[in-house]
Length: 427
Ligand SMILES: Cc1ncc(COP(=O)(O)O)c(C=O)c1O
Image (cartoon, rainbow, N blue to C red):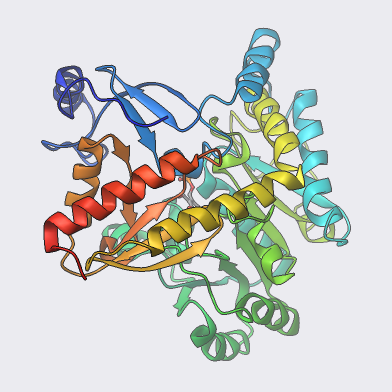
């Protein structure tokens, strides 16, 4: 549904909540300004309602989590059903059946589907935990410490992911505490020659890659990039880790983005849309590789209190049931084409190329468009959208898959009007 605003944005209730938060939350966490944020009260489908009763159109999918729609009824039902019977298990001691079924299902949908044997899983809560479990696996399996990542990648903010290589903004403040294990190479084919020479030194155990850059600006690599990573990893015995926390589960119009290039990684990391709204992530790897971990002797060497949370597992199973339907991927591809066409059709000087895949798209903004001001203006018009990419120069689109043609037209219409009001028409 289109936005319906009852107050100026942010309204009085949101402003009052912001003041209270300012007093009691670390001031690095929530960005508080005149135009930001609105406080969310409820959400359904593509819409979010704030504390003032305003209805917004969400083009972010709430960080690409709400792919199947906010408060997807089947996911809510799975959560409620699980919560009413078993709200917490003992993840690595006395787990729930839901954890068993989720590990089986993840294997079926990844390595078994790819004809690459079975998969074994380490579950986590946040996405970065899945990446860190993958990095630990690669270290145990290869005996090597080195990790290669790529420029403008984002793998989360844990110390392990920062050590592997992260955008300077996240890494630099903590750099003195981080082991020097990472090497950051150009993303795309420009990174292949340097990768070959790094791998040939024999110190690299893991090559960690987002098949399409998410927060880094929705950049799609050249068609031979992923296949070349696969063959270089095979040649030099490094573990290929696909971080599909953003791209996974149909976001790019395929169940997993690496399938666009016919590449099966050694490990795939999932999170975000895996549950559609519960903090649960998964590191799924080829069984022989995952067996590099020692058998538990009663004390796991990698665990956490909420590992394999039954509510998260139940939601993930419900989400995977929907994602496994090939019509979901086809629908995302078709809707993505319509959104791409609408954005490509913008006739305004600030609007550049459209990039990305499926419903993971980015509109390049010319240097003279302040993307923060654009996001605030959009919010004021009832549209929730964020910018990403280097310097925030890309307007990011990762809406719930159910975004309608009317909502797409509305979005493009608003952008056209806003950019024209900044610069005038390009014609
Ligand atoms: C590709 C990718 N990897 C890892 C992460 C980190 O996930 P989380 O924020 O759940 O730790 C993100 C989050 O945006 C991501 O996009």
